[in-house]
Length: 425
Image (cartoon, rainbow, N blue to C red; front, side, top):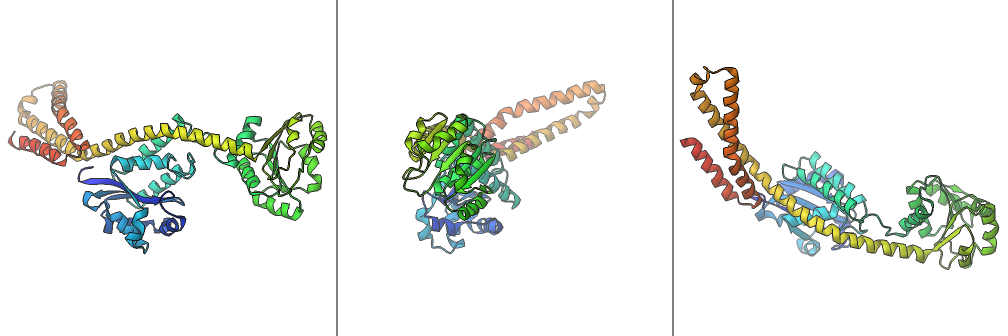
């Protein structure tokens, strides 16, 4: 508990709900305002955050404990669904578990692709949107800073995002292992297969200098090149370009070897055996296996990339175990600190009362104090401040402990006891 309130997270994601249901519940940025208002009016939320992506729709909210089921009812009603049709897809978490779930989401431990980085940007945007609509307050506003801190620790202290888990990223991994910096490398895509496109898209995203495209039909190559912002080349000129590029991605539907040992040998000689990375994603294979034996040729097929992806996923899964421990520890620590913030009004009250009492006593002693030098008066002022600060030290510590424990009655009694002391002192 945080005072008389509880922090909850309610939602569904790719683990619990099919795509058509996630699409139906998706909340566009333009409609966020009405949903924040609806949550306040019908679900009793005091503060709230809405995270809506292609893989999840989640509400994080501070609610009176008696209203923790209202968010599910609101989501169903707002999207024209019966609660019975929705609730089996929903999950609800409370307290430190709600904080932990947010940390897991931001750290990409709950993503479709483990370790993907995009979700953290989406979480940042969700906080910014909630803040713009006035939906965040003194409890949930600090969550963003803590969430970013935990996500950063997960990525820096584990290997959660460092190993390739897709064919495209595995192709980049191969290219980097051979060439290092890709900014001055040239690539040719031979064919229009889907996996070849993915690898080339990944290479382009990592800054390769130039992408060339060659297919059996030149008009198709032109069309494909436009999709990538690349350059189409006639298939008849492919060999001359293979003499110049650094990476060749082969992805065609041909049923035979297009690049044989005999064809590649003169090409490699003209290259002076400068390294050429050949990524053959075709099934059946389009590059003869014995090309790999030629000096300067580095040949990998679809199984090689799949193995890199599998190994990368296993490493990320091992990293995820480390990250889960970190997230659980930070979630509990964060939730306690959020609870401690409910002591702030009590601490402010205690401090105000103490300062009022101090000033009252100084005024009562004004005739005596006026006989002192300004330096002596400053000493008296500093001394009385220090006395009251020491006097309140244990009370302030006790109030924070009571707040962390959710003991609102204890906080009330503590505040009243000091108020009574002030009244009778």
